[in-house]
Length: 391
Image 1 (cartoon, helix red, strand yellow):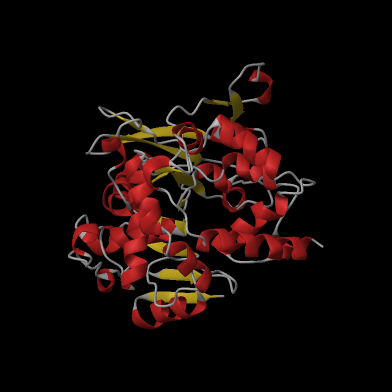
Image 2 (cartoon, rainbow, N blue to C red; image 1 turned 120 degrees about the vertical axis):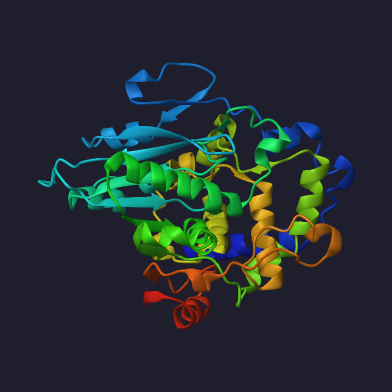
């Protein structure tokens, strides 16, 4: 029954995407509805423990430290300021109650994917989440948060309410955020190298860093790439369906002064929990959207935990980040963001020279992944410095 409902939901969502949507002139979506979908005031309060939650109009959720310490693990929050003024928060799990290794710990740095944050690594708890397993094995675990994500919505001069704050794509994340976070971790721990684990866009920005700033190949001893995203030699039909709507969406975003997508805020959390609850008739639509974006695997979906997951995911990213991926997909290439593309209709940006990557990389992908497909991973494995490719 669940599989049938999901299939019907997918068909309906695809039909809506293929429909002729009139997004101009604000006739279909009034300003109040646009503000509801893309709010600039998030009204979200994070707390360290649930007993801090008092009645009030704002939704209150556990922050990263609260999510970790509730299981008896230590957690820390560190601040990094980039040279262009973004305030990034990075998190750390320095130890585990199950580990006897207290000195000379090897450092592992984990980087989340698009519309995500460090929270996504710690939602299921010890024995299940990778970061807890790493801490149990004696690693010093660090987790990054890129500019614009829920923990890094701050700047020394600009406000996230302003357009200028969101003038970045994953290029700036790879060339500025990532090296700043890595340097901070290495300096703080006194280590010379670290191991890197990235998921989805967390792998994309690693490829950007190692190809544009090759000196960082010496600082990363191993890169483990989960669902790696770089090349688009093969684009599944469902992705093409989304891609066909991007120019319309970009026009809509521009006219309505929308600079970020999927912000994590109180009303969206309440809506997600209502529509995606385990026994809600609308949960099939929530699952259908996840399957279209990440690949279908009904046996792996935890319908009970889905509302909790959607409390923390998705979270903010810039419109330009989405458009950067769009440029790469339509050109079937891996290049830096091209600000002239929408004007001239062709790319004048620079191709990322992945030949410069010398850090050993391990690619890990799923058979049903609609983004990191098997053929793309094999192409990557055969043409670049890849240690192994695991399906």
